[in-house]
Image (cartoon, rainbow, N blue to C red; front, side):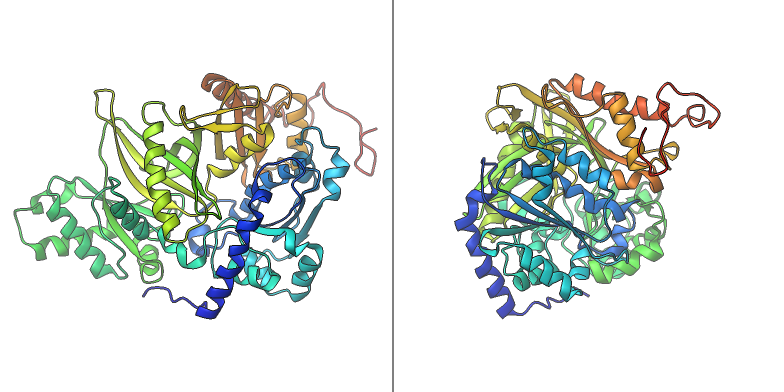
Length: 534
């Protein structure tokens, strides 16, 4: 059955009224020197915890919003960053040392790090709400009239926290989140005149899912495959592929609807799931809670997965922020791994136009802050690409932190006429980014080990040349062998070379020969008992 809204009308009205104050504070959200603001960062992944567990190392994804620390380059900005568990000091130091022209100590004095010391499988925001003394500490630390709150995604938990603190939340209200589901996205696309694959709206049980799949096949008898998606799945991990080729003898117009319906129900048991440990038994249990859709699989010999990112300001204006070509993996290329900026010049301006259409529709419905639209692009073979919109994300996704790192570190601008990003010196920038650089050999690397490797091989971002690599998700490294990075260059080729250099260095540093305790190293240095170098 569909989820119930437990936020009362009175609470919703109070939350909306509090958000109206954002219009008066809009200048504090701009990257303007000396802007006087307190930023409360709540990096809670307030999504279905079962879906979240499909992502290895998700416990450390609260680190993905650490790019906000770069806002401390504004000498009057103060920032509170809250996590479930404390972060390694080296990770914080790493971000603060990226700040151009700001003494480390000055930035550190304007940063308050708080933790719930709770590693349980609950959203961070829920943990904060369960701790009245922590709430009081946060409230006392904020200059409420100059504060705003940002988050990974907005739910009733974030709205409740916003109301308790009296601090406006710069994110879409909980009742707008429906437009970021698979079903809600399809409705927005239809209203906006945006092309998207044939499919259905949300269904809430197995029987209706089979009915929707059979009807889709009957509308499109030449279909070879159908995608089955959990309505609130993330990063493609909630997707599964239904192959129709083994039952082509039942293809319309032959056979009966009842025969196809029966066949669909049987085929669900052999779905090809994109998440590693998913199966029909576990997947079907989530349908009554999260809903599901079916959608025509977009075939094509040459396909890409571009996206466009936008911003809806508190004044209702829509801005295009960026475009990317996403790097996908998984069994059928549906799981998000990383991205390249910008998207291919053949279609990046078209992505912007579609993004504006979708953004204006979302703004009319009261949505706020970030949105992204994902596409499937198929090469028609004549220099043109067919773009099909797949879904809308109303959260800070995998393309948010790479772009914001570039923007905040360079204070540059995105140019709509070219779809390129330019530094203050007018030089275009490009990057290649991932959240999923993962190898078993990287397991056991501590944050300090990574800092040592970065320094010795000069892998860090150089604020002088505005090139190099910005690292993130460093907390994932030791246990999961997983790391995120954004490699920035003055050309796509330089960005890719920088990215590949990081991998080459990490592979060499974690090779079995390099990890032999008996091997000597030109970088070896003595240590005192307190851990500092002599």
